[in-house]
Image (cartoon, rainbow, N blue to C red; front, top):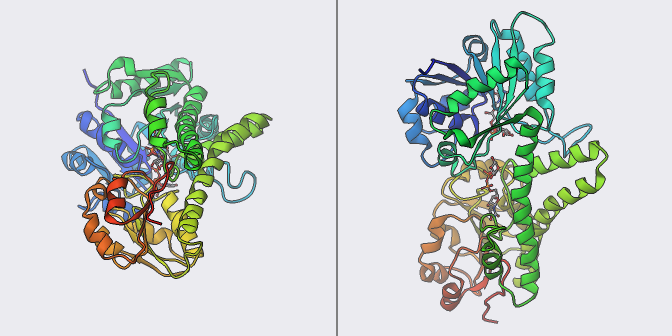
Amino acid sequence: MNVKKNILCIGAGYVGGPTMAVIARKCPHCRVTVVDTDAKRIEAWNSDSLPIYEPGLAETIQQTRGKNLFFRTDIERGIRENDIIFVSVNTPTKTFGVGAGMAADLHYWEKTARQILEHSQSSKIVVEKCTLPVKTALAMERILKSVPNGNNFEVLSNPEFMAEGTAIKDLEYPDRVLIGSRETESGLKARDVLTEIYTQWVPREKIITSNIWSSELSKLVANAFLAQRISSINAISALCEKTEADIKEVSKAVGMDSRIGPKFLESSIGFGGSCFKKDILNLVYLCRNYGLSEVAAYWESVVRINEYQQERFILNMLGAMFNTLSGKKICIWGVAFKANTGDTRESPAIYIARRLLEEKAEIVISDPYALVNARSDMNGAEGRISYEEDPYKAAWGCHAIAVLTEWEQYKSLDFHNIFREMIKPAFIFDGRNILDHQRCFNIGFNVYPIGKPPLTHF
Ligand code: UDX
Ligand code: UDX
């Protein structure tokens, strides 16, 4: 029999919103409330224009909102009225003091822990969803137990493995659900309560349990491994560009080895997103803290190669366009950090856009969903920038197109039409290797892919 549960999530972001929407849909007997300090964001969750774009999200929200899913701003009431509290507030990289640029800024997270303590009138299960440096659940536990008030707080770690753009699918059909708990009687009991929620739709064998620290560390390590594959293939793309090898062919041949596997071997302008860099830097900071400088240097190189790949892209553009971009008009197709999201956090496209402005190029940024975020990211950047959703109009009168996000729609555009409206010689820099390069070359473009020889008319 399903026991009714009252679930709260603090933090209505890219993780909290979709995760709670899926829990509400899969567990109609549960009442799910999502709260956030940002009243505008809550308002957007309650409107027809949701604050984030994610395939399948709007439908899921439509089925559940107002029935057993509620978006509210009253955090205190939320804490009082719910038994299970997911914490999904952001933990950005610290910008000040010890560990600046590396360690996680935990002040939102600690503030949330104190709020839970202050407003709880009964025992709670607190579920850590945010990616946190290992052993922060311990700190959460210490805060929650600092004032003995008769309430028991059991802290669980339940890291999120969903990727943006496929969040709903990843949540519905996860590779695994990981729950870290204390081995005490109450820790195991809390773990069983959370397990029961997931068993409503996830096969039992995919729900794995561990101690809290393994669970926290597994999240950092999973992201570090994924990012490391991208940096590995990107490092080889630089070698391919100097030789006759083609990165797509190498990646295919390497990925067909069943021990290696084909995923996350797409060479690109580098990885972006809110997690990879932040999590690797956390791992690096943690290793340094424990005196493991070689291990720290090893993982740090994954981030260095990622920066190198972005800078290399700019230098390739500069070299190809006769060593000057000054006064040239360059169109950027795609500014989201990956396709199927409007998110631009840590997007390599933002870095590249800023570097192009430094070279005194004029830029036109195009993207189907990310222009609102791009405008705010480019706030304060000096130079000539315009925004145009339509990729055809964006390319009009430009010297070059830089493809920076792998949006499906860019593959099937009318390149004859685009070529006609551009300044000659016209260039395409395909930072995602998604276009038909030979076809674009035949139309008249000079084409510069990643990790393969350019196709030029010179
Ligand atoms: C966050 C973490 O950054 C990530 O490490 C973790 O894995 C999942 O949660 P995300 O959902 O992408 O990721 O962050 P974001 O979209 O910024 O959402 C966080 C929300 O928390 C924001 O809406 C913010 O307003 C809210 N928040 C922050 C609070 O409600 N209270 C606070 O004290 C701080
Ligand atoms: C990642 C993890 O995949 C997810 O499990 C975790 O919960 C959060 O962090 P996300 O950042 O949303 O998810 O996107 P992901 O699909 O991992 O892509 C990250 C970046 O890597 C994107 O910029 C993407 O374009 C890039 N990428 C991915 C490549 O450059 N090449 C690839 O082969 C794959």
